[in-house]
Image 1: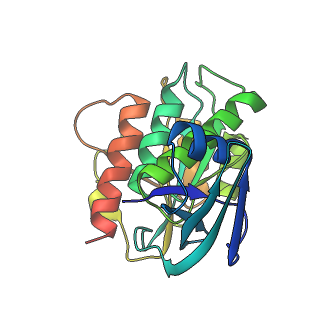
Image 2: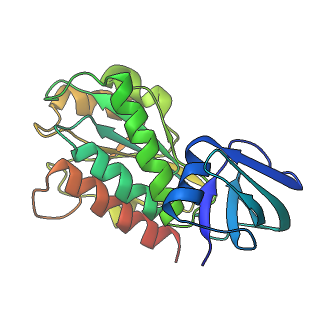
Length: 234
């Protein structure tokens, strides 16, 4: 398999790469002229034959294009709390590989971490890019600016499901409809209040159970996305 790189614009017949990508191709991967790489933009893979490799600039020629077949059929938005340490970053890496299309961080009443510095969000975006390359996806999930709970549901695609430990009747696997888009909300370490659940329901969200065991937020996010993708891609 060739090495993959996401690019920010449509790939032309003649390709020039610079900056970090040129450094990685020349100095880290030590690729040579005559070898191929894959460039990905907007769900399309372009096979590029390297013609000149230098740490400052890499030149090549596009020899083939085709659609990426690893993108999921359903656009899934994941709303996750800003967790302590690197926990949200670990979630982003995993759910990107699983197929999430959009990630919306949020702050709610019992959130422990209540802000997201720009530098950390940029780090999350790099993690998502690398995870998408690893999974051979056709698109990088977008990571949006954080929302407060009372603004969150205006940013989500319907139908929206909220994983809630007190939901006793509706299981996630039983609630999933046949759709092309949906959203999943995972609560913070301290859980969600009854007032927050009421607000979610006012916005049309459905509370669902992830099972009988109480899960940490990062575990719940990864497990729920994996379960959803297994259902949606049957």
